Length: 305
Image 1: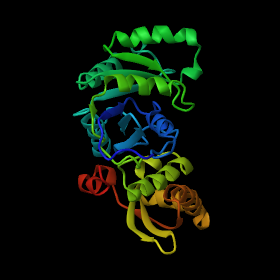
Image 2: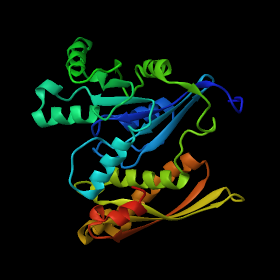
Image 3: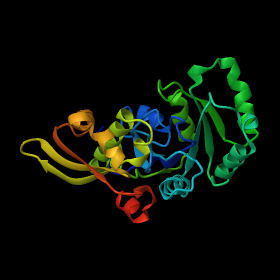
Image 4: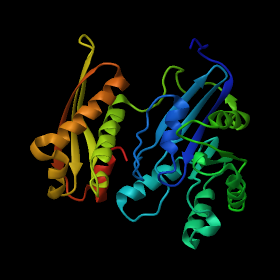
């Protein structure tokens, strides 16, 4: 895309928020046409704010994918909530996404409905409600759901979507274009995200841990990139990363018999990192124990939370 270095286009920042597992990361990847945000069937996969940058001739829309909104007392989850709620500050619009297959607000508990209202009170910009997974229900059932959410918050518009298939993605973009201001592009026009390659590599490794382990392992795991060295002459990057766990009993599960599980995690992660970086990758993984790291605020900061 050959665009002028400075121009007055539709340009704004949009916060993508909602409950865990609503499909926010899937939608961001679909809108971008490439994967920058990790996706698993498990809730609370996203821990950090990730910006996806949509570039076209007449607009640049920066969408902030955020951790799922939820209540928790653990420092890790509280920090995730802070990241999500802080993303609502100084943005030009908000996309609030829910899974349409879940109970309506008036069918949920009083506590859940209060949480919805509490989240909405933090929104001080135009907000669009996205009803995800419309392909799972009959179209005739959509209208009652729309009316239910209108009673909770005065959204500027409500759009049924399918994050996976991209159904109604154009409607989201068109609605954002109608409410976002004009101005200069906030980022270069040739990058899809503001996240570093180092961070994206750590997220890919963490995704494979989520997908290939069960029970408490995904939520007790963190990935830290020890070194990230590029060799431009050989078109190769060497990555050393540590998977941190909370208890010794978890270490054997992640490593597997004869190192088989860790090897599978490494192979799957390496393939995705190579697709991301467009170069060969040498990935070296270690597993270490750091007791109660999810409650260690200092360590959480080292992880970028």
